[in-house]
Image (tube, rainbow, N blue to C red; front, side):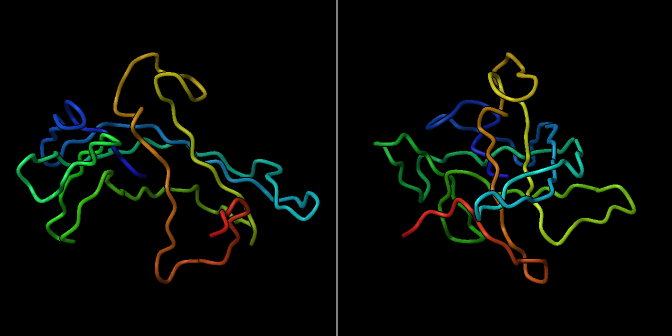
Length: 155
């Protein structure tokens, strides 16, 4: 997940207590794949799993720190001393616990969904950190990595 939510405030008033989290339901859907004119397309739902995760808030913006603000886009980045780098959001992996005995096909399409104030299968109707939560994907060393991004943008 890519988190842009602060525990309190935002932009240049972003403050987060170290270790602070909120509980967020995420739903994983896994689909079989069908070919539609040469394009892999989601077909039948093979598995749906909703799980609650403790999602960390992004770290605080420090006005006198090493990260200069992007005043045009209103990005007030946080500094990672471990990586000596500035970031807008915080990357945080989530791992779903799938039911025992589930066998998945070699080819599948997955999605993650969650509710925000105005979007999702049951919008919350309230402002909250979920409004600044995004989905990202990463391949990890030693894990399956074969695949095709059917919506890849050309350089």
